[in-house]
Image (cartoon, rainbow, N blue to C red; front, top):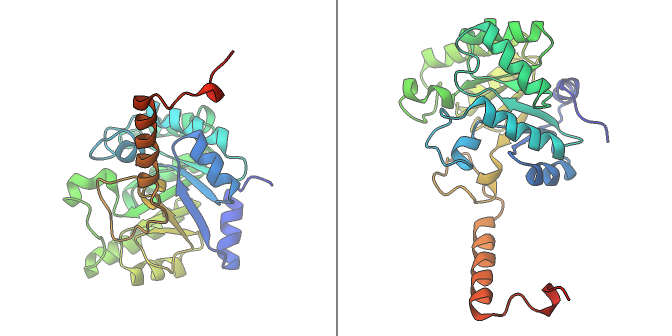
Length: 266
């Protein structure tokens, strides 16, 4: 199976085929979801919250993103791999943004990068696209802007906010982005943006009318117990399975039931 490209995402939008996206941060998860036919794997800076235990995504570094991107790329042969640009890896100036985006492509092996922001990041998106780095935009609730937003709050409910998000979406498309993530915005607004843009929209807490959907893998498996946003659907209870396996292991070792002759060498 050929690896998907940004051209496939555009074709899927044009043909009305929904785009499936999940996050992954390591080789085992990437290999498993890739084998099931996921369209896009996002190496999200959400790794900071669900894997590293940070309260926000802000502490995540370029070195961390490169490490996790390389691991995911080794496990993905069919999915398009998109790597998040972490906080302050692209905001300072365009030269630094180009350098860091280039590292995620060259050293990390990603096929595209994602960055947060709309009109304020249009020039940066255009600068990356100009050197042939595909960019996925991200507007609405942007976790790297948590302090300005005052927390994880739905964006675009007020008319002025909605108009700003429409302008952000247009700016991202005009700057050359290949797709845009819409996070935590009213479904009606997401539908309006999706109908207007030629590029695919990927929703997370943005209703059913987006061209695709993205969720965090740890959320759908019940492995992130710190928070549970309204837009998350849990598809499995992996936490209970893991706790049970650990409990059984502890019990058998304590009782001397493991290892047995079957697990020992002669």
